[in-house]
Amino acid sequence: MNVKENLQQILAHFHIELFQHDLIQWFQAEKRDLPWRKEKDPYKIWVSEVMLQQTRVDTVIPYFYQFIEKFPTLDALADAEEEEVLKVWEGLGYYSRIRHLHAAVKEVKEKYGGRVPASKEQFSSLKGVGPYTTGAVLSIAYDIPEPAVDGNVMRVLSRIFYITDDIAKGSTRKKFEQIVSHIIAHDNPSDFNQALMELGALICTPKNPSCLLCPVQRHCRAFAEGVEKQLPIKTKAKAPKHVAFRAVVLVNEEGRILIEKRPSSGLLANLWQLPNDEHAPTLNEQEFIKEISERYHVLIRSMERIDTFEHVFSHIVWHIEAYKAKALQLQIDRKTTKWVTADELKQYAFPVIYQKIWQAYE
Image 1 (tube, rainbow, N blue to C red):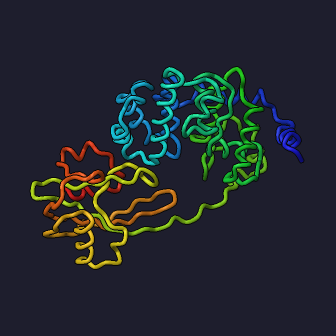
Image 2: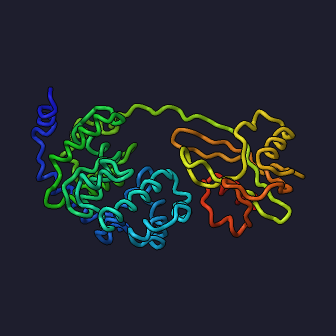
């Protein structure tokens, strides 16, 4: 069966206009009062959509206010230094999101005079902008009927149309994008796309959907068959890799703390961290002291254990055994390391786990 025939079968006997009406009417009555919904500024909508990728709304709200206060316009963000941008994002995680956004707004400033392009071709070509972000920003900010299909939307539609394809596959996402292209409300694509997302967030939730409160229950094929809790179908991700290592708060004779910049690519790129050694769990304490002393050009006078800390990424779990040490500084700052005061430390962006170590140290 070709794509067109498959779509015809999926949409057969589906009342598109009635579905649009039921969904949008519910959204307009019940939608949450979120800060990025207060105006149709494409820059602010774009920022919010990037923040909301893989992050809960409640977590995003204070970060959004803080970010927009610091960078109220696209030009303000484009002109900012990376260190400053990462600091405002600190703690929100998935840092490649903000690095891509920062690069993209610079391109918008250069190529499009600081105005977010309303063209699908132009906007989707920007750094880090995929099909979902393209659809979300263009539909919400510019009322262009583009599909915006994320995990929430795929869950909703898999139930409404009783689709058992694996949503972890790219081909399934494309199928849902084609469905949305056919059922989207062309006279109000902004509310339609936001309503689908809102439905997934508030009603059509992963484990226990509130079907009795659902505004589009009469359109839902999975509910009619009593299989809504079995959908969507998704292959399980691989178990995360566990990595254990040691880190140390090194304090010199002047009370300054040694910090180190992470590589410019890879996990947590360009953030700052405390001195550490990923091979340290295989070393005894004296060997660990020797390793740190040689690597960071210090003479450690005393060392004491603080605690063990854990941080879970999507594909890896860090277990860091943290120490504090008094050290004699043998070398001045290098490109990737700095000796800073406790007050100066606040200017640098650190991964959450290192913030926790520092708080425990204090």
